[in-house]
Image (cartoon, rainbow, N blue to C red; front, side, top):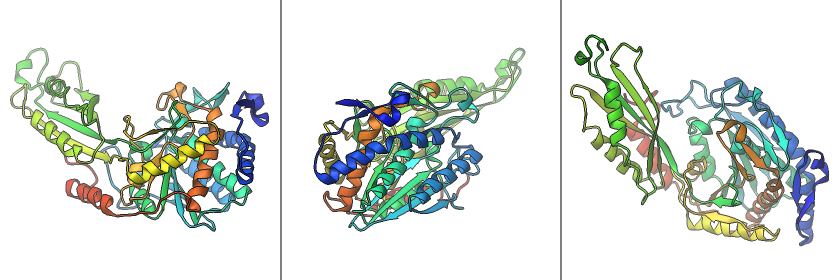
Length: 452
């Protein structure tokens, strides 16, 4: 059943009419519905502050706003700056965004961690072309689906619980970081540590149109290909040069078949640069590829293929090198996460909705994987509202009809986990040690840049 929500009717937002159940659930249904107008207002405030991953001023403003909202709800809030020994990837800015951590203590038996991020992929000034707007059942804006709707969901789910004095949890921690879109170089350690300190982790990245949760995400990385040749005059003496651009093109073309559909590993070349002037044979060229894996062990297989291919050169006397930058580990489905998702599906069914559970990655990588590194507790991705068009400027939106059921689902899951109604709480440091050892061995913990 679909009914018009009075507080949002003026902007054409529809809400799902939720069926009656037990008295406590009835109160939760009603309070979630009351929160929708405030949710939309917060969402507009978040989207209206530009916060690209390299926009330090915008990220600071947004972190202050989020911290204030969480503090007003009674949270113990800290704004965490990037650590001095943070990981430095090839594209890490001098000063990544800060993280906001808020802790809410209750009377229950379990601890729940909520994840979301405030940074976006958009450059400063883009918002002038696409301000926040509502059209029918959709709200549009930069970063609205990825992941400012998730930030707002965390804030207003906690507002619902506070209003009802529903505190059947030992601890709810909210972590909103400012560097997710650049692979979380400064917050990955914080994500892993907080993941290990909680009994369940719910990440609030958005759902796709299938109304789903995700138990697996891709590990993502970058292949950095560099060619060194020799310059010469392009008109009078081209033969005296060693054309780095030609060699780069050869290398890219011969790596077209490296992706492996059986394992889910992919390699796609996306950026290339070469040359300085039309009449000079280029002496250097470089390209970057997006790399994805579904299993940690597949990084080594992918790297071995890249190293083997660069030995097959087109132009003698050129120098070719490749570095595989392992930016984010994959999240793999576990029995605990499957059990947690099954409980979520049951909760969702009580409001007449079917929840799809995906246990194989469809290509995206998120911070849920870092939060899973030091724990065997369930980690579930995709609690945010349904949305689409992430990273696409004017096409990015969320479906406002999904906010109410998603807020109810998250609130119920927090309370059910907190009260011990669903299994959680099995933590281990094995995954983190494997990843940390691999990073230290390959690049060094505080190395400023990757090897050339």
